[in-house]
Length: 134
Image 1 (cartoon, rainbow, N blue to C red):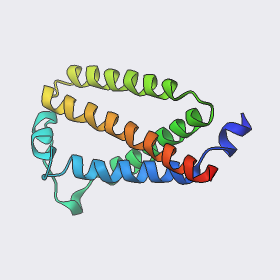
Image 2 (image 1 turned 90 degrees about the vertical axis):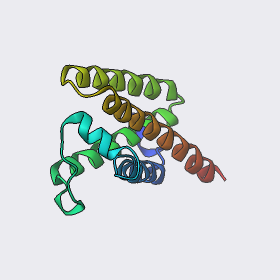
Image 3 (image 1 turned 45 degrees about the vertical axis):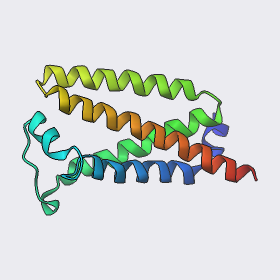
C-alpha cells in the first residue's frame, strides 16, 4: 500500500488537478458553456467577485482527490479502475441531475467536464511518469 502512495507522481497529481480546475473555470465561463448551463441548473451567473468560495474549495479538493486516485491507479497499472469509477460517478451525477430537474444541456456539460478532467489527469500522469523514468 505504501508503494502506491510513495511512487505516485505528486507533480502529475498537482498538475492534473490544477489544469482540470482551470479548464473548469473556462468550461463554465460565459465564453463556453456557462450561461446556458446556469440557466439549465437554475442559478444566476455571478460576477467573478461573487464566486461561491465553499464550492470552489470543494471543487479543488475533489479534483486533487480524483487526480490522486488516477495517480494511484497509474502506479498499480489499473487505470481501467479509475476510468470505470469516473464513468460510474458521472452517470450517477447525471441521474442526480435528472432528479434535480436540471436541463439535459446542463447535465451534458457537467458530464463532459468530468470526462475531460479524467483525460487531463491521465495525460498528466503519462507525461510526468515518463519524465520521471528518464
